[in-house]
Length: 82
Image 1 (cartoon, rainbow, N blue to C red):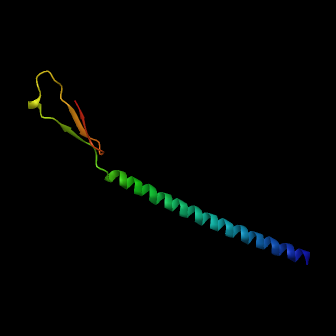
Image 2 (image 1 turned 180 degrees about the vertical axis):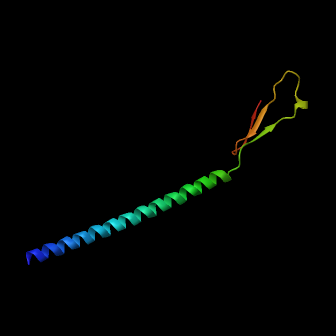
Image 3 (image 1 turned 45 degrees about the vertical axis):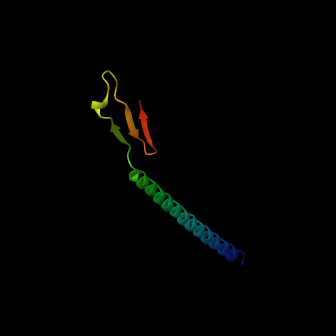
């Protein structure tokens, strides 16, 4: 009777350990999938943002000896560096 009980407990413990492993693996795969989708989404969102466009002042309006003012839009507003 003792021998049968130890065999049953061994089989049950192995089944519980296997079920725990399968559950942990499925949760790990789910987390990895969620992280992959979030990374792809952030990568696509970064590609869809407009690139800063450099604007130039026309050269014929400058006085002689002055440098050209730098004007650019960084996506948050226009910056004018005189």
